[in-house]
Length: 117
Image (cartoon, rainbow, N blue to C red; front, top):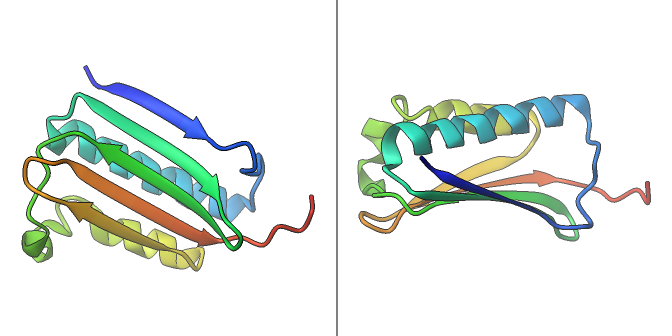
């Protein structure tokens, strides 16, 4: 079993453009599937926050991590390429940080303009 924590900061909008919502949901799902399938983690935390110009989502696990220098071999098998492609659709980006024995962090950023809504 993996313990999952969700943290949403109060200033995060409850509604986004449908395309952004769908792509973010799919990327977050892929990141969580990777945790379940590959990380051997006991905990994962998903955080949503908003800064002046971006919606930022992080998925952090305490699993076994991997050597990011091997990433070229892992991109297809871990769906990392698809994550990047989905983020490009919404003019965002995804970064993956990992270290053997120290877990993995997936960081998603999408431009966001607060229109006072």
